[in-house]
Length: 164
Image (tube, rainbow, N blue to C red; front, side):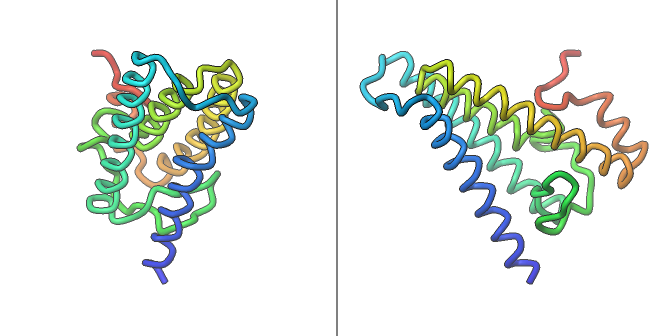
């Protein structure tokens, strides 16, 4: 049953973040042509998309191996088994939410590809919703890991590395 829940969580996350969100951005943008783009937009978009997906996948794999759990926790509701260990190294030394940071980079690449104000507005609204989700998740992490999590918060940025 646990394996089924984990696979389901990964499928939901992949479909939602990598497929549905960009599709909705495209729809909200009045279905702009996807080609032809200027070469600089193609290059920069692809770089952001690849880096974003790579960071998210690295974080997911790392969480599964080191955290012994799954990232999908939707507004305080456990969709799949939660991690049992606070992760502060690997991709989590860069950001407390590297999966989401990667998705943000990926979606910025999509916004650049679509090149519409509607896609940017959709992205901003997405960031707001996900920030609320992260806030609820952080309350749970404070309960679960206490001072260890507080120290981690002081040294690591929520979405991007802290400048020291």
